[in-house]
Length: 317
Image 1: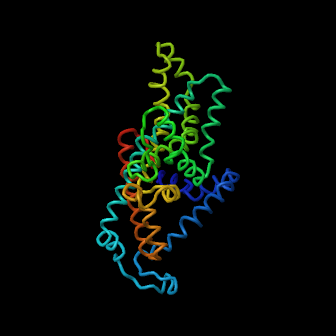
Image 2: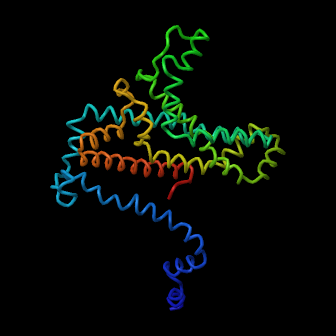
Image 3: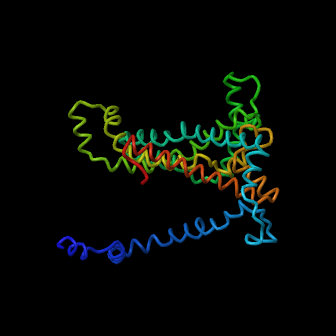
């Protein structure tokens, strides 16, 4: 009886939420635009996913187009199997290379910046490293094409050093597409990506460094046993978010960089969907491939989140 009486006076979740909203109304007002953005531009468009199971034509509309079940998925995996496995292979390989070389780069850069004690030099280096992030993709690709052209800066430097006798056609040889794509991405996002790790490093208790110094640890051991464990939860979260995009590659950059000569290594899911879905106006096909892509990404996040939770006790949920 006493337990039942006490339980009846406990506020439910809605009452707690109401009190929290009243107490932090300024924070809730600030988050309204963000929630509205995701609701309007990310959740409402999910209504159109049903065209993946229809033979959609704009004249009949979504409701008037006939249902075809999994026909578009079958067309993707069976009839276009030659292209499908090529674009899936290219998409995964570019993401794996980016995960191996691109993901650790901002972490290493943040660790190195943390070791710089000259404030002016450190801030100047940070500012310079952030700048490429704000350059548009079109300009970035234009710079890559100029630098790596047959008569471009890179070929001229290599020839002047005696490394090359004949210039390399970087932009038309399939083998050079992935290194150029991943390398330029690292250069563009190195400084910007390091911000979150620098913020995590600034939250590490200074007493830990003092204790490590008393124990005789030098700068390398302090970084190894204090800094890296201190930012490990942040690294895990960023890794999980990155794995959630394993089946996605930036459409703009690939579209601007590739050409028919490099399709073998450059053609990815998003560019193939663009050609099939928009240029050939097969909208249902594009929606089916996009839905398949999102489901795979979702499963990858769940799988990697479980592994991270088991190994590091840090996870998204």
